[in-house]
Image (cartoon, rainbow over all chains, first blue to last red):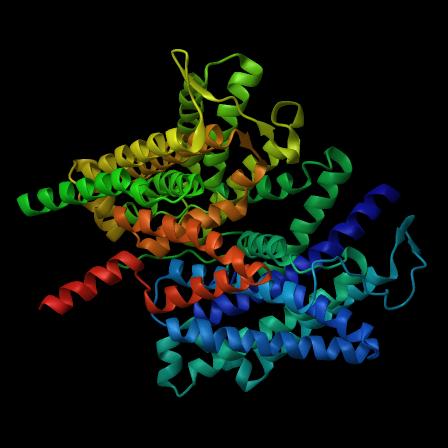
Length: 290
Length: 314
């Protein structure tokens, strides 16, 4: 049984990061119909900027703040320079643009930073905490707690503020939103900036556990996209559940069955879920107009 | 109709002429190698374009089939005692069977859900190849026996240039002809609207599956050819990034355009060769060029060029 909790905690920790990346995918997709494959690069940026700014002598909390700021700026630039000019292009063309952006950001990171692996110190020491017989890294609580706070804040923002409701309105029907006076271009920029911030924070929280380097983004984008699809694209709750589920599946699969086929379990489950529920776990049925 | 027919053969003849005459301006064997790479990649892209451009279905895991073809050419002679050519056929057959079995459930999905399912399939193939190292050599890859036909062994960039060129010509010819068959028309119908196609009596699932199997066989043959040409395979050829590269070739060149796939492959293969001069900046420039060309030529290079030319005439 302690084994079970050990796998569960490590699975949920990684899953929380997947969930945050998936949340970024969902936010951007809801507001703009773009599947942003550069989403993983924000996680990379969050970690790498924090590492380099803090080694330059800046205290860690300030360095983290700067990293989030940089992520937001890059997210906004991505929208204004690459996505907005391509308005009206097909979904697949937009996907290729975001893949181009992800290659670009990776290339920029390898020049601005370097190609080494980097680590951040844990926020509150490395003494494991005993929980139901499982040794839990204190950083895991930071990751899980951070993810929970972000999800809560996002929920309050979307449901309780006027701007958040404008985001939901844009997601529901862009034309109708524009007709009632919502500036949908601003909302899309907001979605890109917000998802970049979420990705950046995820990168800062997870770097003490998993390390970071200029090329960690691709794998995270892949897992985040998978988590978002598992939950049902465009559904924030689905993204969170999908992410946590994906992380746990990997951890249990690796622990109980085979660690070399760790990534396989996640994809097998996704295929099985999609065969039985073609719109994901929480997705709406799409209706095609003829 | 006749005009289209002659236009089609015009394109094929032009392609044959380019393949035949290009070596006259090659200063070194290095150019033979790069050109052969372009021909092989273009062949795979043409196949994927039948699925994406004609039938309107996306696949983000097509490198899986490419990898199966490549490893068939490697494993057949090394572990099973098959001649290279037989291994190539077995690989293509296996890819077709797998595409048929996997495609049946997967192709019921739409849009992004189809994208993630194909991506998952590709990831699984790559994972099996990386893990089953006693068969595949694991992450390090494995050597591939040279192609030999009746005692004649194909080696050297020069020979492979002609084999790859011939393969491309054949692949382009089939893709062109497909357009004018009932199957090609059914692909176009379900590309425009699946429901409308179903209403007119087209068995939507059957034709989607057919396009998927055709694209898988193209990718598998390209994989085998590349493996035998390089004399070496590694798991990257089945990986996600290679799948993305193939999709980018198709979209950059122009969805639905056979010539577009060749142009897209040429751009994506040759660009990194030029950009190696810039060393560190290679990724940066590659990403930048992809973004800019997709913004300004959103239908792809060839359709955009065609539109500009016809506008100039009018």
